[in-house]
Image (cartoon, rainbow, N blue to C red; front, side):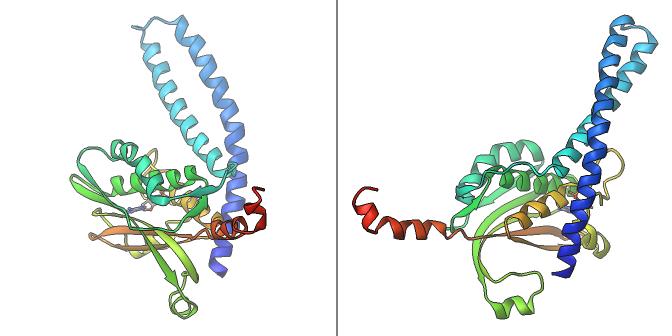
Length: 261
Ligand code: ADP
């Protein structure tokens, strides 16, 4: 709990700082890109200066992508939680995810039966899926497979006291596993740190998993990761069962419901 609190505080302050910098930086990039457009209109396409300007444009656009990612991370986007079924939400994303991971990687979908409902913003599930699938794709060289599985699980106090990180209660599980390179201990210890990346400059921002972590925490869930170098990785996301529906049903069967109110 202590480390989770520290992690949350760190994300909060890093997020605020990064958000401030990204905001100012984005304004500057706006000026750069605007002026660049003027300049490019003035030189002929065959001019060598045009090639230089084109490269500046590509770099500036890439910078804008990064600052936008930072802004999205820092800005707690307004969420509209609603009751939803995890299987339907995942199913709606499958086509997009297939395109995201490319043709060399098999996407296997294993929906679990009679899941409990969740209460969260469906776009947060989309974000979790997109981030985890991109990471799985990047971990696989050549052919491989990515499995998305759902299920439900309950944990009691005894189990949780023996398994650090687990929270007692009823949870819906979303598992994303890949046959990729896996992670060593040092990587595994740092994956949720904002800006931690092993992907190299210009490829990773190190914000994907801290974003996922933030979403799961916000929804009172938790994450469990299994990974071995050379053996692949599996991310288990546990999201709490939404029980509000039952309460509503109970009041609906009362007198008010009977009188049509
Ligand atoms: P980024 O993808 O920009 O590097 P993330 O926060 O999404 O940032 O991931 C942090 C790091 O965690 C990655 O750079 C990689 O080293 C490791 N990682 C995440 N997912 C996987 C995975 N499925 N397989 C192997 N390594 C992974």
